[in-house]
Amino acid sequence: MINILKKEDCVGCNACVQRCPKHCILMEEDEQGFLYPKVDLEKCIECHLCEKVCPVINQSEPCKPLHTYAARNKDSEIQRSSSSGGVFFALVNYVIKEKRGVVFGARFNDKWEVVHDYAETLEDAKVFKGSKYVQSRIGDNFKFVEDFLESGRTVLFSGTPCQITGLKLFLRKDYKDQLILVDVACHGVPSPMIWRNYLIYVSPNNNCSVENILDVSFRDKKNGWENYGIRIGYNKDSSIDYLFEPMLNNLYMYN
Ligand SMILES: Cc1cc2nc3c(=O)[nH]c(=O)nc-3n(C[C@H](O)[C@H](O)[C@H](O)COP(=O)(O)OP(=O)(O)OC[C@H]3O[C@@H](n4cnc5c(N)ncnc54)[C@H](O)[C@@H]3O)c2cc1C
Image (cartoon, rainbow, N blue to C red; front, side, top):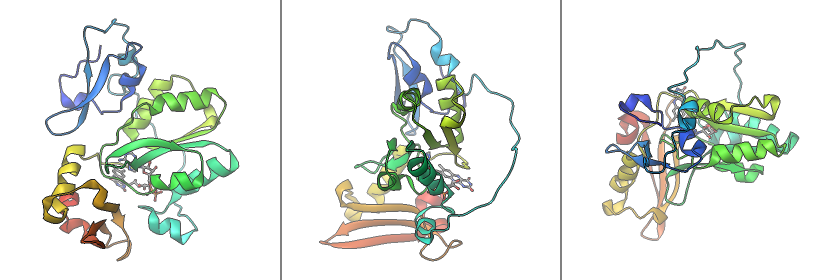
């Protein structure tokens, strides 16, 4: 049974929650707002499947890159709307157009929380573009990946390296070229609670109603690649207003 004694012994990947045959593990926010698994001991049958899929318990040797490439998307609009060079969306394009596959990534939901989801068209996959600096909720998406793979579809799954390792352990099968894994370079994910509180803090009259927020970009490049900043568009007094702050001047990004 998963028993987190030290916070650093869990990366919040959600693999244990989804693998439990008795559905007795739930993700709950701790006092800082990070998601950790909580086990219902009454329901646990001690099958230990949760431990078998845990990336912290099952650490492998660090691997060395076979090859390194630098690239950027040729489409300037995709470059602009992506956080870096838009290579992620080039891979999405390949999987959806060439392979008729399914892509998984992180998007905002209607409460501006960050959640994982999947898309089967280029239009629907646009919501995955751009880094969201918040821990995403994986939900049941590892199970959906498994279902699509077993039905013969090609799948691209993108997420943090911790989520990718959790998915690989969850699947416990090598799907070879049928599964394309994209892990973003990641220094860690901020807490969903801090993000929620920040949205209230920046909203007009500190009265953030999520339906007033129109769009969020953590890495807006309107002042160029080096002077990027966070941009939040919202409704204010029946017009549209924007907050734009360079990375180092912004309370959320700086901390
Ligand atoms: C939490 C986080 C930390 C990062 N830390 C670093 C860093 O330390 N150094 C660095 O150079 N770059 C960092 N990045 C940037 C990341 O490496 C770039 O997004 C990457 O270079 C891809 O850029 P792109 O232009 O190809 O695609 P983009 O369209 O910008 O990338 C979007 C991709 O990021 C995924 N994604 C977005 N938000 C999340 C999230 N919260 N959780 C999981 N997946 C998410 C989407 O699913 C999609 O695959 C970080 C990104 C995130 C999300």
